[in-house]
Image 1 (spheres, rainbow, N blue to C red):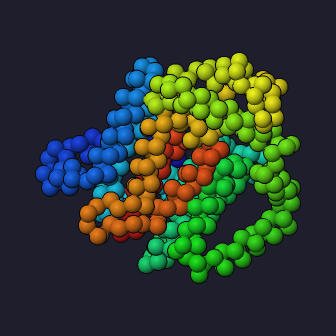
Image 2 (image 1 turned 120 degrees about the vertical axis):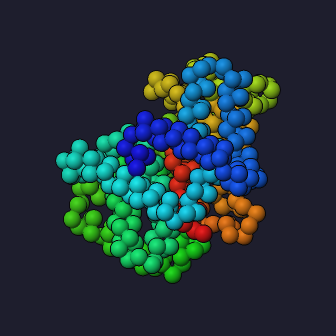
Image 3 (image 1 turned 45 degrees about the horizontal axis):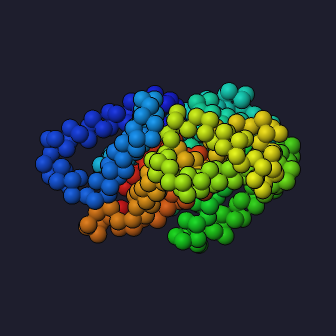
Length: 387
């Protein structure tokens, strides 16, 4: 529930979860053996610890160390969390909390905007616009497989469908194109791989929804349509070509660091340590070499606080080693084998979450981020349901 409502509650919930897991490891020998014999547990814990160590090496700033700890603190408890969701009681409580938390945030957001939408971009009542969009996109990727899995209880399935539709509505009103693409990619690939028979009916439903929106909300639909078309507009849409210019700068800066063997390439500069390095590189060295809209960042007096790309920004901020390690862990956790036993084999129920995160990360900085925490929690929950 805290995911949708409050940042402090997220941290408090994770710390309490860590305390419970540590207590169980200390008191339950069988559980301790199961956890300590799991390779993913040690690998994810290693990536977590390496992130903290590389922060000390990269910047040594206390604020950076705290930031890295906060944004990656679910890595050591990812496997214990998944083991907890093997029990139906824990799974049911968790998904009920997710659904309840979303609807609280939904009603608070709708009330904040007077229960209407003009077609403009709306932020959430409890999150800023981009974070709210990412949360809604990940929720869509989580719920889509669960709707097909929860076939034994029609009432609960109806609740999940209603929540899924509510998340779609909230995502649309954010106007956030990256999360739109992420959610669409995750859901489409899942349907193609696991639910092909549902594709036709869902396609008809989507077309009918579009026609209804054109008929009953023409102004809002026109703005939505313009936003969709702008995704591929790299000539007149400022946000697009500014982003492309930042990507070009980020790639050039990272390439320079790699070729010169700088410590930052391996360990990163961290959030505080990166400072004005990117701006200094662009304005002092790269501005005359840029191929994409040369000088456009200077024209807009743009400060490169991040590259608006998870992969470039993570390599620059956290180093190539942590970036590759974290992506490896996410892939393993989402679709790889978790246990030696055959009871938990590869799962497609978490694949939409991973794909949604990776696609959204092309235009958003999510490594690490609150979305990184949401993703780990949602993956554990999705794989628990798939057993």
